[in-house]
Amino acid sequence: MSIRKAVIPAAGLGTRFLPATKSTPKEMLPVVDKPAIQYVVEEAVAAGLEDVLMITGRSKRTLADHFDSVPELETALEAKGDEKRLAEVRRSTELANVHFVRQGQPKGLGHAVLCARHHVGDEPFAVLLGDDLIDERDPVLPTMIALQQRTGGSVVALLEVDPEQVHLYGCAAVEPLEGDDADQVRITGLVEKPDAADAPSNLAVIGRYVLSPAVFDVLDRTEPGRGGEIQLTDALATLAGMPAEQGGGVYGVVFRGRRYDTGDRLDYLKAVVRIAADRPDLGPDLRAWLTEYVQTLT
Ligand code: UTP
Image (tube, rainbow, N blue to C red):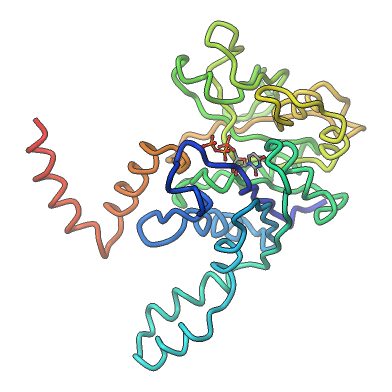
């Protein structure tokens, strides 16, 4: 069954970015001049997923407002003849069919995904974490969607990380998958945030998933795990051990492109600098300034 829907969980507390995230979701923090979440919606749309469901928490309003139209702003820009900004303001409204559902309490990423059940129904769907930014020049979703269609199971994106970073992620045990692409693997086990000594590999799960709808029944039965939260990783570990006829089987695509965790302050700063440095409007001036600035650091 083809994939049409994207789910974007954005109901986390964002404690790593306090106090900025006290009243603003971290997904609304600007990366240059667009909120992080808009890059993520643009990525979903570029992969053909125009039906987007956001799972929101207590500060839903700014997220919803960003994807809504603002007639008075549009009228003011029209009156000024500022066509460029007018187009940018309209773009986020016209980008996708954006829906919202409230998580109620932040009981974990697995619980956030379970909140999408009614909207998604009985079809495979993508999950994109709203604070995980994948550079548009390095798309990974199309490969993941193709692998889901080929296998009928669930697919996660994997990143090779330094062994001492593994405790920050879900970590995968893998075996080769038949086919020519060594970056596509079968997942035999998953552990959430393991100590380096217990980690089955240095392959970390990052915030892109293409899931079989079988995940909903599994999440429904998944007890709170690490941190007292219902973990998507635990549900995926169960799916990895289930037969294909029951919607089981989990696969991985190793991602080798540019990606930023905008919920982490240092990674956020790197994202802003790298994306701005590559932009034709800001890049030349920023690069010149950065080059001078770097010399003052030595
Ligand atoms: P994180 O693990 O980054 O947690 O969530 P967090 O609470 O958002 O941020 P920190 O660690 O406290 O700074 C991973 C993703 O899952 C979503 C978050 O919005 C983020 O996209 N999430 C997490 C939910 O939607 N609901 C939850 O209950 C937990």
